[in-house]
Length: 161
Image (cartoon, rainbow, N blue to C red):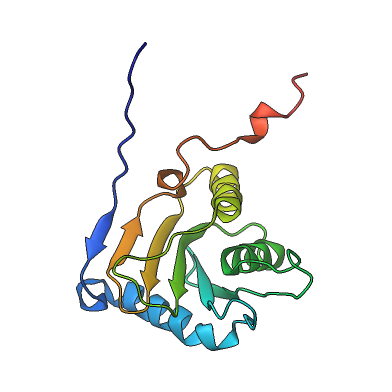
């Protein structure tokens, strides 16, 4: 037997005041967007913002439905909209915020992690992630791969010719 370890690196900030001006602006925009969440069942509002290298942004919120699981998480709403609208633009950062406070930020669900990882792999460039939940600390990850170190990759299922 060989024991192996995985180390995950991220930055933790006590408040938004410690972030760059641009990061503060996009986190605040994502927080303002929480008002657009449609979450009448869970009452758990989530907002996400995609920032392209060009500086353009796309917003998303979680969208619930009584016919569960027909709803969709904020991260997937934002990234699907972003890549549908701007298919050739490189994503620089995703911001994920929740209305509920927690000492540390809530992180994306497994499905969202996989979707974000696939887009990161497709663009062959890391997507930075900023997470914040209410009055929580702020976490910044330099790559989605930190969320999903054993990601299921397309080459696992694509036929080799």
